[in-house]
Length: 553
Image (cartoon, rainbow, N blue to C red; front, side, top):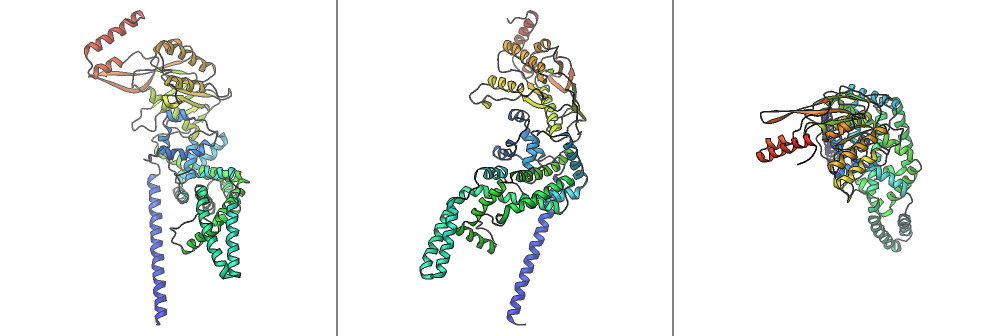
């Protein structure tokens, strides 16, 4: 065996070993991802996104029409719920799940398609995991919104700046001169390369985010290609839609599909060579603008790709939610303005207490501090939202009309810049009355007009709640003002929470009862926490005096 043959065999052996090691590492990585997907499915996620990340995720929702506004979203701490159920692995799925929780307007026939897909992937673990694997390859980008970058670039920035054409022509011209006359052209070629590289880095900053977004969009397209090729989409209509959109978009992407951003850390010699070509010719920037121009003329197809792929993955997340809930039901919708929920519970609580309610008119809820009023409001509100967004209710049964959901529960003085809590509160209540008359509205109000004095609060609350009733708004309102239960007993049904005092402790059962509350615990809490007897006795005497005479002494 000659020395050259021996060296060639050694080189081939090293290449083969490297290939085997790479293959084993890749298979091991895939195995770990699959085990992770299997483990996480049907469990609550424990993630804590920053406000900045949630803002990026929410940009897709901000560009769409939805029913849940920021006040209601924050009142119910929907970000926490979203993070707990976010079993998505791509930016498209994550964005769309966030959008779904804001209750887009969905036609009844679409629910059947959604149910079909949710159930299918719950029952077919192999296909579900294969589908999730494709979405993990797409990945997420929490630094910026892929959707916003692509759409903004399409709408506002599709013309190629002259500097890129100049750089391309300048480089080609210098190459031609160098070929014709090397002694004269070499200096011009070096000048062209230096000038073009400097211009490239100067102008490339403007496109960094958009070109990165384009890379993610290309991953989304490749994911769509794999889903259709492997026949993982169980619904024929969605399969055909994804396949058709992919084929169209592949033509629109053109050469830009093969020209990624400069990557100086790439281990590939071919990629490094392409990086230098991009630097001195600006060819990737030119192709990028042309690509954006073509996509702009077919923006509906781009939108469809984002929406359809996001929707498909969000259905997998809904299936995971159903597996995680100890009890859940599919909602029933009716044309009658009513709401009936049996054994509803808050999905975010470790030991929730189920409650049932059946109402056709508004209800007033009274009860002691910490007895469960606020939690009950949030429980019902969250059931309504989950019914209308994910078709999944943390309850044994749900039946109601399709509602536009509002709340006024946890407002802050800073919510409306420069305005007090009371101003923020009356603005929040005013917005409830503004939807068009054709829409059924349900609202949840915790401590009506708490930001003002007692006399005016009771008077104004009475009139506001009467106006809600006149407009057909189904209102759930919690209050400490027992007077409202008498002033509004013809318009609102009364419910209450109660407590028991035993061994110096106040015990709550967190169950809702018919009728108005008859007990108070504010002074008892002072006593339990060790306040001076003089304070306790004085407070009790003042209460008894007021209840018997209607006057404070």
